[in-house]
Length: 197
Length: 197
Image 1: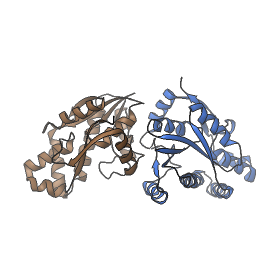
Image 2: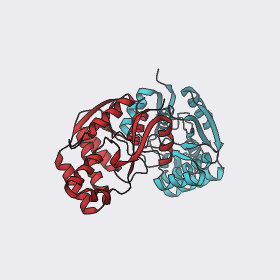
Image 3: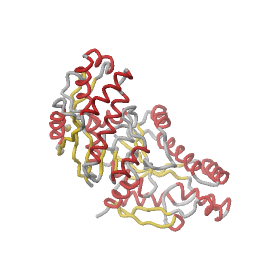
Image 4: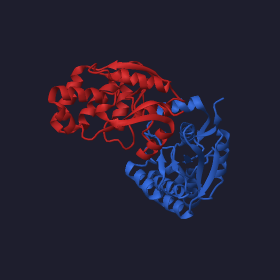
């Protein structure tokens, strides 16, 4: 079964890819608004893990809408959720057998409830696979440390490969750096450099 | 990481074991009230899949309570849920790093909400792993057909290895065969005979 797995270059989506790898023909897919070179960084991480990589374009209007929601809300959750759902829709339209992502049991956003998962599957005749849905934070940290070479740091200094990086850039352009700091306080992220030797 | 995965000899828990196998040191565990030889059948299926197998004893009072709930309710869901939670508690007490089961995204019973999962993890200092939590029914059927040699049939004629078989036996003994037919109508199940060649 072909699986197009949404990939940010971060720890969670990389571990999801490793869990799926023995059972699917996995391609890692990064959604991009074309606002930064985020997808290039994701491709490097995908290749370092030994996976094929593709980029799916998202309309810039989706990023604009997400950023306006974040500014109105004062927090990023609903904007991130909006972009994640748009990404799954875009990937599902590419005609693969299965789509997936790196969301986890303990995530608050993005999160895809069962009803939305089944709607995605029915409308696009696709399976929606979430390898980490049955894993808590501590189990994920343990497996990631065993299997992945990871670099950690604050979001703004890591060459991260996901749409969040693009959204932060758009937010900074339109509302200034202070808006980024207000909406994404103290955000440490991880970037995957490869598998553990 | 050691993982004690609850195992019935059926398709779902077998596929859960295969998904976990590359990442954990998996032992398949069958809970038994000692009412039938169900655990022996589960052991055969576990060995056919190439896994170690252990049996964990459950107090017969748990089976009695579950059967009374089923008779009162007229359906098995809450009784099964009660036994499943008791099983996870018993397996968590064996001192492994992680426990798990074959519950699926689309299951109605048993199902372990996130709050119960986190309570299990906190009280027993254990990880709770659900390999199929992010898989829908159709994806599971496809993967199981690819990876498992499966025999299907009505519950009463298959030498099934799980506590449900024991609960049906107790129900028949205490309330007659008609109670089993009322509470478990048209119940087709699967037994795993090994991996796909």
